[in-house]
Length: 478
Image (cartoon, rainbow, N blue to C red; front, side, top):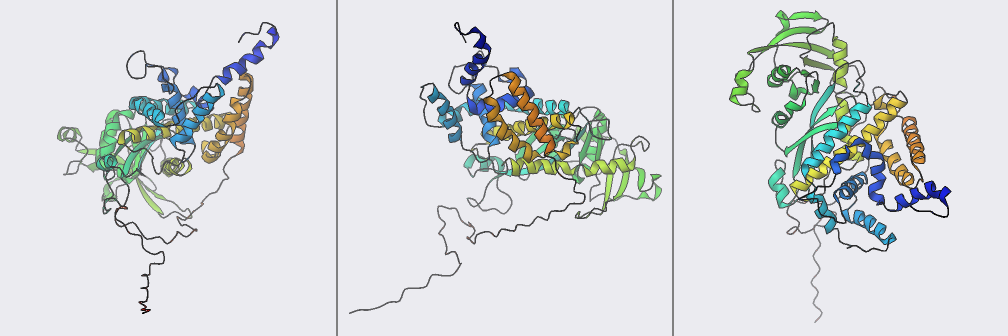
C-alpha cells in the first residue's frame, strides 16, 4: 500500500489492505489451520488440472471445504453466498449457482486430501510431543465404524444396504477403519469399504503404515493369530483383547505374576481370509504371547473380567498393570468417533457420489486433526492432560474466535488472540468423573410416524394414529 502523505501510517494501513483482499470464509480457518499443513500441499499446478485461473482456485476451494464441514449441516449454497458477498464488496458479481464450487471440489484429487490427513496427524503428534503417559513408544489404536451415505444409485452400488434393508427404504452404509494416535488423538490413516467388509481385510492395506517401534492397540478382533504373528515381523507389538473363539490351557504356561502368564499360540488349520496362501505359509507355526487377566471394578462397565493378549513379553519392562491401563485407554477411540459423528455432524455424509464421499470424509478428518493439534498445543502450554480438554468446547471457541481474529489489524494482535484462545481451551476443561456411566437411552419421544417400508415414490402415507379411516355414510336425499 502506498501512503505518500502519511508515511508513518503505512504499517497500520497496509494490514487493512491485505485483509480486504481475502475471502473471509476461507481465511477464517486458514489463519489457524494453515500452519498444520505443508505450504506446497495447496500450491497451484503449473500444467493440467488446477492450473487454470478461476474464481474457485484450489486453495480457496480447499479452505472453503474445511469451513463448510466445521459448520454442521451447511450446504454448498452457504459457501457460495460467502464468496459472493466478498465479491460484492469489490463490486464484482459471480453466479449464484453452487455448480462452480461443486465442480471445483470435484477437481481436487483425492491424493491431496489423503496427504492432508497424514500431514495434519503428524503435526498433531509433534504438538503433543509423541507422548503417552507411562509409555516411551508410540501407541496406535485401530478400530472401525460406519457412516450413512445418501441413497443414490452409485452409493448403493459401492457401499450397499445393511442386511435385511429393502431397496429404496434406507441408506447405503459405508464402513471405515481408522488408525488413531493415542498421544494426540489425531487419525492418521483411514480406509473405507462396503458395510459388510471385515476389519482384518480392511486393515491389511494399512499394515505398512505401522512403523517399527509402534504398539498396535485394538479390541478382540485384533487378538487373532494372523495379526499377532504378522506384526512382530515388522517390529510392531500388539495389545488386544483375547478373541472369544480362543480356548487356552494355562495349566502348563509359564507364570510371570498374579494373573499373568506366558504361553504359545499354535497356528490355526484354517488360513486367515485377509492373507494369501504364501503369506500364511510364511508365518511361524507357533508364536509366544503373554496372557493377562484383568479385573475392572468400574461402575457402569459391562465387562468385569477381561483377558488381554499381547506380544510385549518382558514383564519387568512392561508390567501387567500398565498393560491393563493401556488397554482401558482404547475407549478414547470410541470417543473420537463420537466427536466426529456427533459433534462435527459426520454421521450422515452429504455428497452423492462415492468419489466425493471419500473426499468429504477426509476433509472432515483434516479439520478434526487440526482441532486436535490446537488442543495438544494448549495442553502442552498449560501442562494439562490432553483428555481434559473438551473437543466440543474447542470447536465452539474456534468458531467464535476466528472471525474476530480475521479483523485484527496486525500479526501481533492475531498472536495475542491465538494465545488467548489457547488459554480459554485450557480453562474449559472437563471435570474428573471416575466411573461415570451414561446409559444409551433417549428421553425425548419420537413422533409416531409410520416406517418407510416401500420406496417413497410408491409409498402411501397412513394416518398418524395408525387407525383406518372411517367410511362416509351413504345418504340419499331424493
